[in-house]
Picture (cartoon, rainbow, N blue to C red):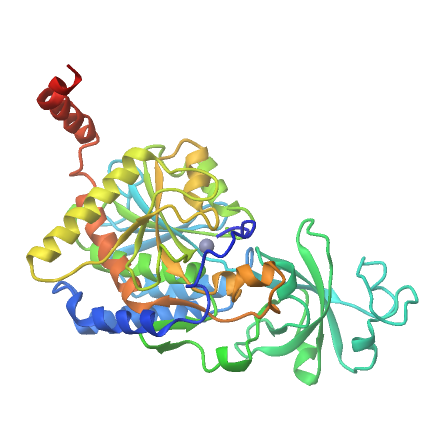
Length: 459
Ligand SMILES: [Zn+2]
């Protein structure tokens, strides 16, 4: 999601550490919601994809590590092909029997979308003493122009000027731990933010201090992410009481869900028109999605089901099931498509109940941020959103209290419910199966019947 909105007063208990109630109810639903169409081993495999993907470092414009994972995933499936558009977005579609997939006809006229980036740091280059003042940092040092802040001047090590691509409130940066990844390395080099700029144009800048030889390999373009400490840290990714704690649920958990759906659907003849579009640079303003919306490569009639991880509020709890999202901070989504998705979800839940199972799902606005469905809709494309309720949105713990100045800011692993994730995969499959069944005129038919039967009341 892009940019956190201005704080709402006292709205969320669910973005703090998970409560016992959340954990218990999540565990309890595990047995009763497992659908017979998804075996235990299928779930184990899709959970493995979820854990792997959400632990990969990624940033807007620097999504290559996630892309490499997806390339090998697609390469292992002969029935799928992967194409890139000019913006570098990935389009994954079923192959037609006997060869290439086609852009015409019904192929991929439903695209499930998710974005490949997460709010993160990108190194711009090395900083030497004397240049800091010119870069516009407010310095805490001895006050002489261009001096390093006192905390830095006393240290040896290496200093990198970095920028942060994504929406995180200012207090979370001060003195925070980070880890950067040299090209080709999966080992994070720990560093500390020692100065944070105020300007946001185009992105907030900061100085990160590193110690030790490992930092010698870091260079401009390398990506960094938050380094967690304290009780919230522990090993990542990890599943605890039915919750997955990891670096970046937003939006890599959605990438995993989209691929898991496609893994199930792509061999089915009736679902050859269902594909996946994975976009770049969403966290800095839907840039990849806008490029896709403007491009002619995707037919105007293609229906877009955009997946998100959206900040959970008390009324949209983690563990309450995947969410059919009807709008966001900026807009409401395409009404016919949103209603069709809702009726598909209702029909699926009814079928599950009749089969003796439960299928929890939610229908919500989720006004904590904006998503790609808004970007696509702005270009007249039919689009709506399905999302997972997310804890520690953009790695911020206790957002409202921090913004109100009531508590020091602390970054933390994002978390989602594992059951919500499996529920989203089930829901996606059910939605793409049933999307064409729904009749956009059914609302009007209901109104006509009510009017006919009860117009007598008007006298
Ligand atoms: Zn997102």
